[in-house]
Image 1 (cartoon, rainbow, N blue to C red):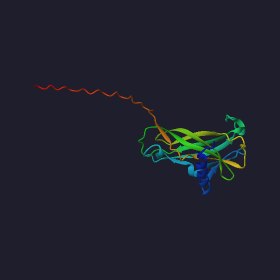
Image 2 (cartoon, rainbow, N blue to C red; image 1 turned 135 degrees about the vertical axis):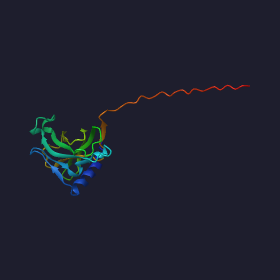
Image 3 (tube, one colour; image 1 turned 90 degrees about the vertical axis):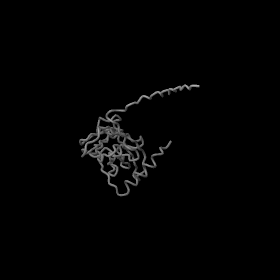
Image 4 (cartoon, one colour; image 1 turned 45 degrees about the horizontal axis):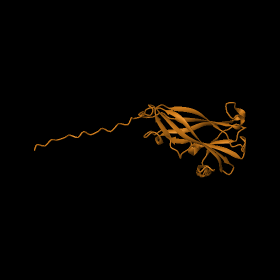
Length: 193
């Protein structure tokens, strides 16, 4: 069954890539080209934390194939994509430390910019009032019919703007026990005859 999201993501990626949007590419010689879509490399924290004017940025992008790294579970069929999240320090600290789950996508496109495969990735990052650099490795396995060194395909990575980031308080989720309804007492008033 076809994924109904692929056409939407395909049109988003094609319009983003083909309208003059630049990409930042990095990969070793054994890998297909892997690109970070620059227009999808930033996400405002205000989407998760109200009033926080900082912006999360994807940067320091690097990709490597399984043939050049023994740290990938699929071996030579995997591509490891290293990204760094950067968050500037808050100018006016007023928030508690929060964990924010950021949505990413990894999409495989052919030479005509058609999306062949797409995967969503979620990254949990602890956000504080100080500046932060957080490294994360995405492990992507292309479909079996596409070789990791294909010159006719490339991988695009960026924030998934169709999904909002999710924030979790450092205090965790508090459960509130439901209260039983109280019975009302009826006062009896006696009448004198």
